[in-house]
Amino acid sequence: MKAAESREIWRELSTVEDWLSGGLARSRVEPDFDALEKKAEELKAIQAALTARTAGGEQKMSGQKGPQQRRAGMADAGAAAPAVGSAADGPAAGGTGIAGIAGLRRGIPGMPAAPAGHGTASPSAAAADIRPLQAQPRARLLKAGDVLKPGENPASALTRLESEVSSCDKCGLCAARRKAVFGMGPALPLVLVVGEGPGAEEDATGRPFVGPAGRLLDKMLGAIGLERGKNAYIANVVKCRPPNNRTPLPDECAACLPYLEAQIALLGPKYILCMGRTALQVLTGSSEGIMKLRGRWFDFGGIPLIATYHPSALLRDENLKRPAWEDLKELRSRFE
Image 1 (cartoon, rainbow, N blue to C red):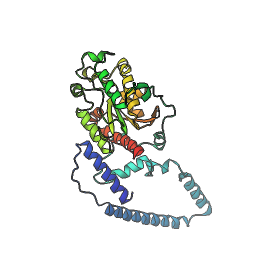
Image 2 (tube, rainbow, N blue to C red):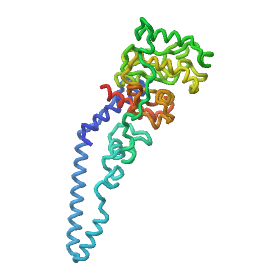
Image 3 (cartoon, rainbow, N blue to C red):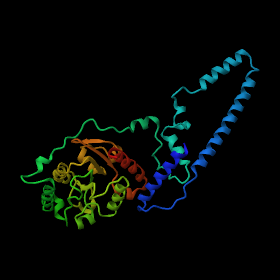
């Protein structure tokens, strides 16, 4: 790995560590990657010289063999030599596959190690990880014209819907709610962020993602140039808090889904980012879990949709933060 590449990776992962641990830039001593590259080249040259010397000695000894012995030796060598593109060329042999790259990255001083299970896929697994836009798009049920009433614009229609949500009694979640949480953000967002449902702090304030998970979400969005109220709109599948923050029931999601679809129709986001399994399954109709579908692109009525782990999951499991960062980078690559 060249010094410039090692330096770029080290700086990027340092930035990720900063926003995952509070957002403040920490002081670090950057390794001398030029010196490390030079040292690696010196070691490579020494290894090449030793290999050449060993090969020369073997050639000298082989010259004393008879014709039949030399032919047998050549046959043995041909049988032992790996074919082009064989497993010996892959990551296990120190190649440039996923595991090979991960091994090189582990050798960079000060670089955080990848969590177990990440960056160690076989070549076949790496090929399976290619994530194209899904071929079967889910049709969006509503368009802006279906939601707008005479004389309304999208902003006034959203205000009307928010008022309707505040008095909604279509499911049992309304019984214990303090405040319904409709959503917040600009009228024409670049990205619509969809979570599962309000928690205790959201129920008290009427604003989405304001607890610990919300503070982490703000850092996650900020790391890829997004900000609530500026270019990101924040909403949830259900607008009222489920008891004890449990997962919303199917009938509760179904009761709230028309409100969310109306929001999507009026906002017209360029991209949708689903935070967690519930939002992903409700909007895609898939029964697969978040671990299998995160980072993949779907089509929601013409809007590219991608999902990653919910911030609350990242607070519970540090190992999920790195794959979540990869998902955010995938989203950023679309709109940069």
